[in-house]
Image (cartoon, rainbow, N blue to C red; front, side, top):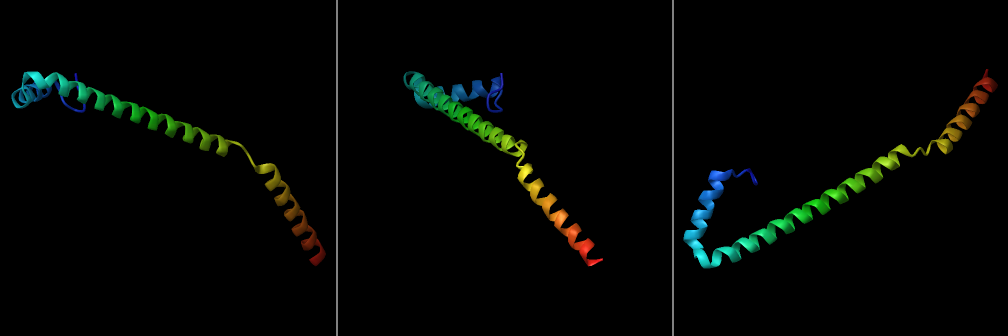
Length: 90
């Protein structure tokens, strides 16, 4: 078991220190509040990740959607105009 880079021996040591510092009566209350805090952090993290993925998909979709037909017309027209100017000059 590895939570936040803390293994089982480290977790046991933290629990023993918490038991000595806070006592057996307050330990369950502190555990509940820490559990709620961790759950809140995980929920916020998942929400951020989902929003990030959604934005990335929108950007990807915008990049995939070609806006080229209008640009292609303009380039074709400019090329034709340049060629006609070139032929007129020679």
